[in-house]
Length: 367
Image 1 (spheres, helix red, strand yellow):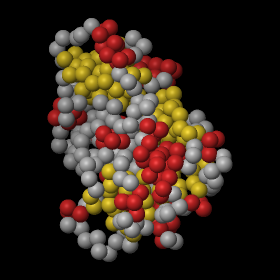
Image 2 (cartoon, rainbow, N blue to C red):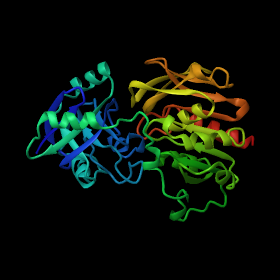
Image 3 (cartoon, rainbow, N blue to C red):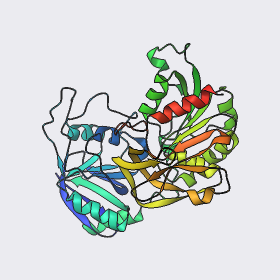
Image 4 (cartoon, rainbow, N blue to C red):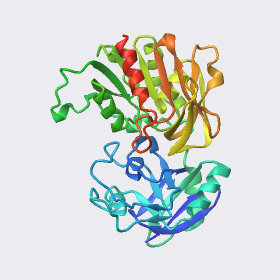
């Protein structure tokens, strides 16, 4: 089958289908990871996005049963230069193309991903539509559909990916939590499984709650700490979460990642803004402003906290992105909170920033 991706500026890149037939609208962005495509596909932070992988050959090790970060594939569409048809890995159960077809995700290969990535870098992330089928529609019709989409600015996508009701992580697997040292309530704005795995490995009993859970309900769990997860969309649009976080600040230690970081910045009185093309990949350099150590990080976000808007709040920047000097982390020690923009839980990505979970546990230890 044929396939293509059409951008709102009128550009159309033609290729061929290797996923499901159909069409999907989203924001065209690029990811610089060389591996980890299965984790990327299942990361809820990628909701309503069409991912272009910059590495030219994707699917080499197939798809397995363990490298998943949520209950389903979350991306709108997937674009690669070349999809490997014959993966080689002892854990592989199917090809990447088969996986996309099973999950009804449009995938297109044969695209000049270098040219597409350069266009996004120069002009910024754009509204787009990815299509696959037997008979190619008129390019103008596809472009018009892309332009008509509302985009991510002002979009609350956390409500679309959050859990329906509260649950205890891994309770269904019969794990004994009676010896857990810490009781953590984690807001699910689009939480990744590996965050929950790591918290559990540090002796935490984790109760995951929906994004719209109020402060009173959270405190009723008598948590030792509160975690604010990653997630998709515009943080400023998740107003109910911002108001809840305001009521929780100072009550218990708080740790936020990605969207959780942005929401915490807004709850402190700051502002957020949309980046030109965002940060997505497993190789982004970040400097720890306390230690001056450089961490190679896994990232996936299109919005950023304006650190200048937090000058009078008592919050300070702890991490700096070395590619564009944007804020990657902040803390307010008197209010017992800290957060980072990137993904210390990795999956995919390096593990340079795993110490942040230790920092959260240390805060809970101190009460």
